[in-house]
Image 1: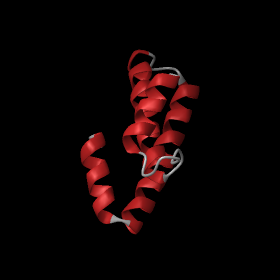
Image 2: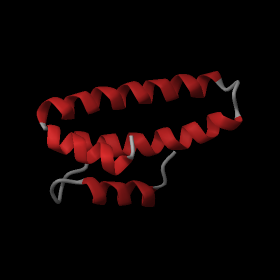
Image 3: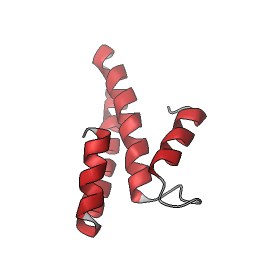
Image 4: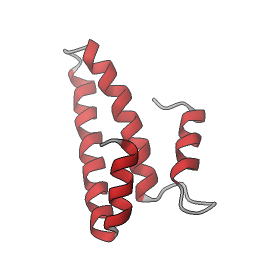
Length: 86
């Protein structure tokens, strides 16, 4: 679970405009951070199948959003992938 401070920091870093909180790029950044945290948890808890299921759902959602950004703006997609280290 992302803390409020970390979430706000990510939104401020990736927002396109002042009121942007839900653009695809912002959502991808938030999902990537959640995936990193859950991945660390799963490294120590190999038999936590319910968390693993949620982890796979988050990866699928991020993949679909990345495909959307790639179709709409290839340059933004390339910058995002470099910045997030995906």
